Length: 545
Image (cartoon, rainbow, N blue to C red):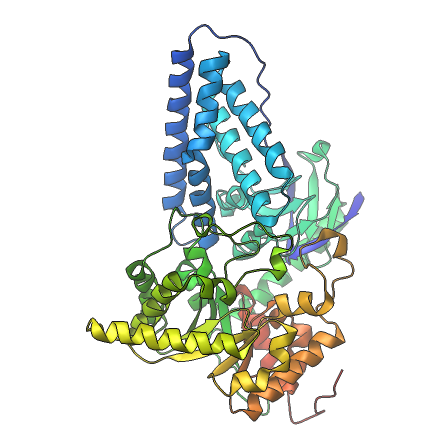
């Protein structure tokens, strides 16, 4: 038996045989063709097949996380990009090379060009170029197959997996995912969590593991290769206990979020789109504390129009009924860029023109979103929230735009409701003026992901800092307490919607701080509810860090 220690992206236990997956890297030999028209026709045929495949995958992704569909949209955008396809056609026609070689060369040239502009959005672009090129070359070779798992469930092991590759898998045939590359906040890890699949990363995987027996312990981040019979029996027992524990948690779906001493603190869900609402209901969340509306703006040729947005928000409002649902306005910029906005390249986009700053630079697009959410508020219990606030002047501009949006709706005779509004506290500046902000809104929502990286001056996605990045840092916890106190002094509710809201090791701490609600990914609602219902706030008052 061999033991390999990595990191856990999602907890759980699995045992079975390994299927090692290697994404095919096509290598096409250069040779002079005789008939360019024939190669161009082959390219167009492959292009049509790939487009048909992506459209089918997009339709099949209905009900899956919104980011999955956005992934296919982005790939379609690359496929339809005239710069990409024209470069391939010209190579075939002018240099008399095969379609496969033209695709491969165009891919390599674009990757080399883009790699000199190393930003998160460029990394995504490179990924989509590689994916589309591989699909085209597979189509030229006569096959567009997905990962074949076989008839029995397997532990999927790979150097790296794309989110689309995970979500194209048959869930019943996959026991766990183990990769060499990734992080807890990578798209693939998020997809694995959504599918409730135990997932490890940061393990030096090897192709010769294919077909061997293994155990994945998603609680300790450990892979056991060729385990003994005794160990298999032990982990099978633990797996059954794990399943029983999850079944017990499901009994809490309809239980109220009340501490032992009777204090009610709501547990809400964070979602990427209305496609995630089934998970909100399955896990019994009290409402939606954060809907990330920016995914409606990504992977498109132009921004969504008012009616398109309205229909999405109306579906959210009607689905939630009397339960609250918070729509965060578009948080674009940094690593989430919409090409049609023509956002200039920035040296440090994380610190750049993003969130509300970018929205206020595109007032026409922003006001359309405001009109859509206020219209949808007529059909349910919606609220609106604004990201990356750092000044009262920004709130002044927002208030003016809300007045303008409501006036426009009234002039058109369109019904709307006044709805609650809130701001996200994600910067140290917002922490320091939290009481003034709270005096002008209905709630504050602490976005601990950005607040932590701005407080520590560390990029949370930088792999070089993964051992140094600490979202339990006393400075971060003290800031959370400052915001809660400031909000309550102004008569305003305060929520936490960042990743650490799901950390049950901190649930009691947040409750003793006086938090009004915690908003977490749907799969974490019940563990947080259990921790909350086990806490007695009448004992041991909060002690500052």
